[in-house]
Amino acid sequence: MSREELAVQRARKAFQTGKSKPLEYRVHQLKNLHRFITERHKDIAEAVKKDLYKSEHGTELFETLGLEGEINLAVERLAEWAAPRPVEKNLLTILDEVYIQPEPLGVVLIIGAWNYPWAVTLQPLVGAIAAGNAAVIKPSEVSPHSAKVMELLPLYLDKDLYPVVNGGVSETQELLMQRFDHIFYTGSGTVGRLVMEAAARHLTPVTLELGGKSPCYIDRNCDLAVACRRITWGKFVNCGQTCIAPDYILCEPSVQSRVVEEIRNSIKEFYTDDPKTFEDYGRIVNKRHFKRVMSLMEGSLIAVGGDSDEFQCYIAPTVLKDVTGESKVMQEEIFGPVLPIITVSGVDEAIQFINEREKPLVLYVFSPDNKLIRRVIAETSSGALLANDCLVHFTISALPFGGVGNSGMGRYHGQHSFDQLSHMRGCLIKKLNMEGVNTMRYPPHTAKKLGWARFFLLKQVNVGRLRRMAMLAMFAALTAFVVQVKELSQEVLAVRQTGGSRQ
Image (cartoon, rainbow, N blue to C red; front, side):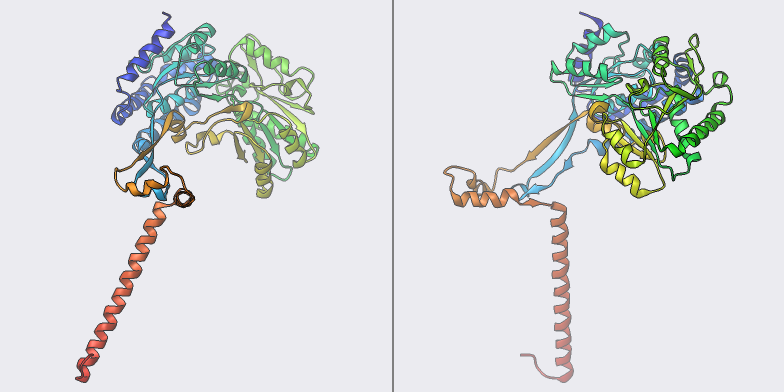
């Protein structure tokens, strides 16, 4: 038996004991995960520095800070998320208990990505633990130093419920041969298809976070200095190796030169005149990806940057101008510090250009015109839409994060992670009385019985509204009673004052 198969069997056996289900146990594991992140923050920072040349502060800002927020939210709201969720009733079930009960799925496989080896690996784990599942964690071998540190996770979490399995392609393939109750994968569409194919053998549901070419439309009427500053930050953070980075810019020809200059100024502001020596500018993860990114620039006009050093896997922040939809750089997700600019006549052509391609993970639009923004929302489709900024929607736990079409399926963050990794079990609890009502469903079937069934089944009942109506009715009745008593009292008083008698 392979170590991968053994880890899955051990996790399933541990899950079947039921120990992951009590909320107190889940909270305890979540707090231990938080302790792991805080106590091992130096190890984590050093590993990310070796993998991606990211600074210690950059690691905390873009990797672990969000994780701490997700854990704190889950601990605070877990009882609410896991509670039964009442639903609307029809007249036949108005006196019954009808609700949705979230319950654990079982054993979840989490296949992490290398570009943010901590954030995109452990955020799904937060949801898996909160939902009461066991989870097998497979870090990406492309960021080996981070994967090595992640092996310390079982020192903090239940080692049977939450094993870490390291290795390369063969180990991942061996894991995918096992039966899981859910697979959560972050990475490329090519591998995502292989994951989905493997999952189909066991009818296993999947969450695929895949990325794609996220467009960024700049309206010529917006504040170009601010827009380009935010785009520069969103594009070149983590050396462009961010699934939600702006992949390319769409703008009118009249503002292309200004966009280039504003981005040039922002690069200098953020990374100095020599980004290669600047602590907060990263590196391409390995030479294979370095060569891939460099090849994408072939045939395009470099407007900013273009410098590179293969030995260091360094590529300077680069802007390409006068790019077309047929250019090599537009044939795949760039996933590097290269930003093409494509000119369009306006928002009409921009929308058409976007809609002719696969649905992106996120669509960015910069404009002071809310009407234009609403139009882009209405006439396009993407995993998310962010207007007048980049990346920051990822920080909002209340928003579902995920793709659509080729950019992925499923969603996570906050309660969305909990719901994604839970089975929403429909529950109906009836009593063994009022049997007479059931005669409408019992044979022999008649037109009269069908009429009653139509009335009872098609009439939805909003219990909250019924309660409010009942309270209003009681208040109205009480008010009427008080008025009658008052009128009667006045009549009695009048009779006494006149000395008469009341008939």
